[in-house]
Amino acid sequence: MSTINNSPTATSSLVTALGGGSGIDMLDLANKLAQAQFANKVNRLDTRSETLEARISAASDIRSMMLALDTSLGTLIRTGDLSRTPSVANSSVASASLTGTSLPKGSYDLEVTRLASGQNIASNAYASASDTVGAGTLTLRFGTVSGSTFTEDTGHAAVDITIASGATLADVASAINGANAGVQAYVAQTVDGAQLVLKGQNGAANGFILEAAEDALEPGLANLAWNPSSTNGELLASAVDAAFSVDGLDYTSTTNTVSDVIPGVRLQLSGTNVGAPTRVTFADPGPSISSSMQDLTDALNEVMSALNAATAIGGELANDGGARALKRAFSGLASSTIMPNATGTARTLGDLGLKTERNGTFTLDTERLAATMEADPEGVAAMFTTGVHGVYASINRIYRDASSTTSLNSLGASIRKYTTQLSDISESRTEIAEQQEKLRARLAGQFTTSESRIGMLNSTMAMLENQIAQWNRSDS
Image 1 (cartoon, one colour):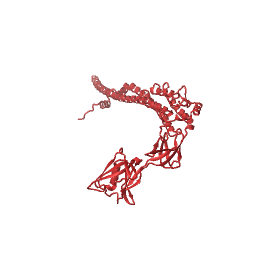
Image 2: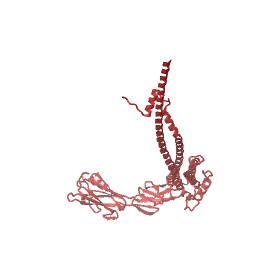
Image 3: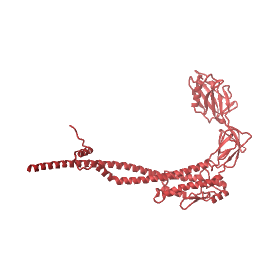
């Protein structure tokens, strides 16, 4: 015996198939009624979602414009036209870069008499790298090697290296490298045979000796030991400090990288020039300042135009605290003292010609800029640095404040807030969808039951009508 599926869908289909019921699609009606019940809530969420997305987009665009301004200005000052980029006339002697610790100027004479180097030694020769060398412990001690004497640096800890039984020359090199003692080891296949080569770090204090404590059952490790008075191995190069002079003053350095002997400059020594000093000079940013100030003014106006549009009546950020805070920061930019320790006339961006108009946009007073540059050229140049004060520091501070997600009034905090609200809306949509589906299912069940009952009544009525019709025919 077959069974009938009593679900609302199956029942409704059955009733329709039998020709009974009201003739109305009850499931479609239930779906439409459920949608209508929640339509207003869904529409409100849609509107709110569009508003939040527009706010996030507007705030993100302005923040991105600030980032682009901050990054381009920093690059321009560090390595671009506004940089006091150092150059060395004899590039084979040294290269130079800025450290950012101070603003370099003038010129300097550099003479390099010796480069820093590390100690290199080679062991006695073996037939091959796979020759066994004995077992025990090798010890590296560090200090200064002078002639046939060694003075240990007790502040530089000695390093013990265990050499296992059956170890080869190649195994010893691997064990020394694995100790990370600042000594590099490798096996060189020379005309004399396989030799263990040890290379130390630059600087006279990084000289070293190699001691061996042999395993009595497997001797031979002492053949690798080295000190300046021994006959084992060969000293290939001594550890020495770099020696150089700047403007006739003598200096030494444990490395070939030297910082701030010339204020604000890092020198990378690469060659010697005994008796032939070379000149270190710096690019003059002065000729680029006027055009760079115009570029800065134009970039600030791009940000302000977007900010004004977004905060206008009806704008995406009309009531946004972060946008208002950024406008306030821009309004005081031209008049704020950005060089508090300056002794000349160049103290504010206004001194560099930046003017704030009534609508918050900027113009450049080229006459005032020219007058300041003439009266205080060094002070103007000093404003273009990546230090804690100056043009870049001021723009960077405004950008960082606007991007902060912890401040109550910042674009970053606004974006975070709007994103959270948008996420809440997504959760509300999910809840409404669940409620709407429950209502639809309930209505569908109720309507299907009613449809079945109507069908039964229609069938009963049809049967009675047929019976009455038969009675009437019988009477006639």
